[in-house]
Image (cartoon, rainbow, N blue to C red; front, side, top):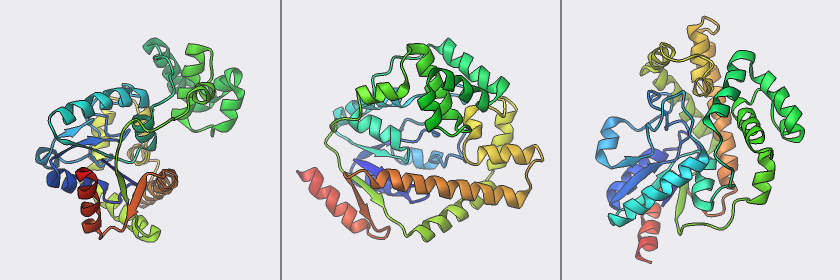
Length: 299
């Protein structure tokens, strides 16, 4: 079972209800919720929610550690098997499209990147900036560099470490073994809001997250980690770092986080709309979703 869709669409609440209704366990599919100490800004399930049903794939690593889509696929495949052995329903919930694709359809067979090289590439970024890394990528993989924006830190570092470690570009690996046939039988649902309503939900949630202690969360992270750390460049975290450095005032802070989150939601909707297996439902149509799941499980 999969509950997908854009941020702030109500995925977590729906998945929690389904897990309680159908004796399920939740498997989070969010590339930011794997980080410890990053709770408010990633909209991580609360401790109270985590006590209601079993959650998996949360708080896996510290912010200065690395976790890939390939690792997610391997770990989650094992977790799904364990849940099924308990005769429970695995429910994957989240908005990271790459994690969803990796789990359901497999991922390119890229060799494990040596940790020493990963740290070296990251040190280049921290010392010289993302533009320097983009120029390095251009030397080794000019076509890959041309496809990326020069400020796209995460993808630039990933492309660079792959080509340096293997001598083969990331795009070549992806062409050799693209996403294939579905690895599981699954039912996937998503909630379809009118865009302006979803955007307003994002605006309101952002304000609540800031009021709930997001800034203090970032202050705590900055006491232990560099502001240039990759997770601290994520939506909201980067803006709050700038706010704490007196580079951004309160109202521009709020507006910039809201804007970046809306842009992210638009990209998510584009991604998931291309997934033919996902069935979209109106947010107030829980009865139809429940009926669909009952029929699916009976089969």
